[in-house]
Length: 156
Image 1: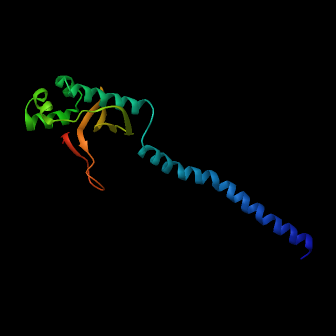
Image 2: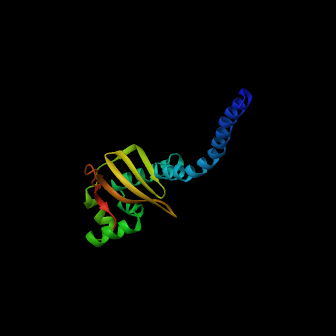
Image 3: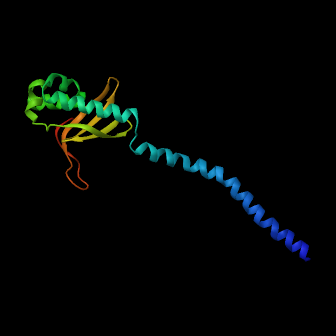
């Protein structure tokens, strides 16, 4: 083999390898796209939805302190039903739950149609319904590592 043939064959190999790598990049991107989207969907969403969840949690926390009827209207249907099944009509049962005083500013983590809002004094879980965010659990305290929150008011 001449020097020219060796140079040509040696030069062609890296080029072919680079071409193959370039051809695989879009394929790799397409394969990783669902993983990236899944991870993005599992992380907290910011923006308007987070603020809407915080606003709903603050409306509930404020109403609990003086307008039980309004606070009851902000409960998710299953949560209200659970409360009423255990303790009677919501407007009289909710004040008896001794929910902590909570205030803002709040911080929300939104996961699709569910959110957790941490306020000063309380952690509130919400779910998004057609009519907006509704409280699914309130008066929640972190029970520790690998344990669910312990909540005063919760649905089934």
